[in-house]
Structure formats: C-alpha cells, structure tokens
Image (cartoon, rainbow, N blue to C red; front, side, top):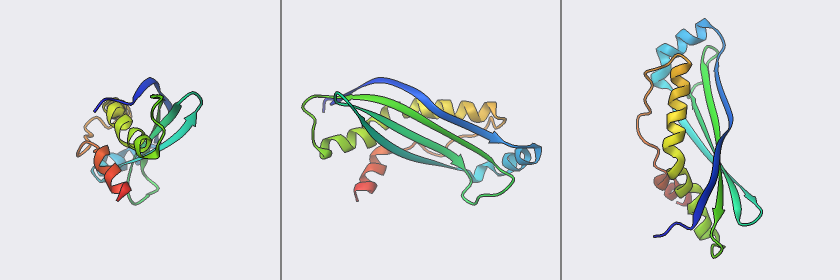
Length: 140
C-alpha cells in the first residue's frame, strides 16, 4: 500500500531528564529495571492538509517514589496528508500507527542517549513498541 502522507519535519518539542540528588541517582540505578516506557500520541490539525503528531514518551516507575528519576520527551512530527485523504478511517492509522512507526527508531535512540548521559548507560527497552498492535487495541 502506498504512503498517503509525507513527513515535512520533525523535532524535539520538549525534553526532561530529572535526577534531583545523589540519593535519587542511587535509588534509580538500583531500581531502573522496574521502570516502564509509556507512550502517548496526540494529533493537532494544521492548515493545508498538514498535522502535527506529538509522540510523548515517559520512562518512569509504576509506583511513584520520592527518590526517583524521571525522563520524558515530546517528539513532534509535521505531516502533510495527500489531497485525496479525508476520512477518519484513513487518517487515524496514519497518525497513530504509520507516522509513529516510521519515526520511533529515532525517538528510541535519542531517549536511550538521554538515559546514558543521565548516568544510566545500560538501559534497554524490553521490546520494540508495536504501534500497529497499539492501534488495533485502541480501536478494539
């Protein structure tokens, strides 16, 4: 199936890596295996068949604790939609599945670099994010 969109640009809209003190650093280092990746996607229409797809990535503990580190990034993608695309059935998979799948390798690399430079070099995300599966579940 041919692509019904073009990516015109992409950029880091917001980024945060927070470890407030040595105790938090040590606590995080010992507990980072309990951290999980959370992803949220928002779409904002722009003019001329364009949209901004914001992919928000958070890496944090499930149970919030006082002594923890927190990592978050919002990655924005400017997408131009083909002229003949005008239904929600065609737009939704583009915004929620196709675009995120295309840019995710960059997001993951940036995020792992942030974690490395924040003092946590051995973090690996247990599995690749499957946007197709997430999209199917969301439609469910």
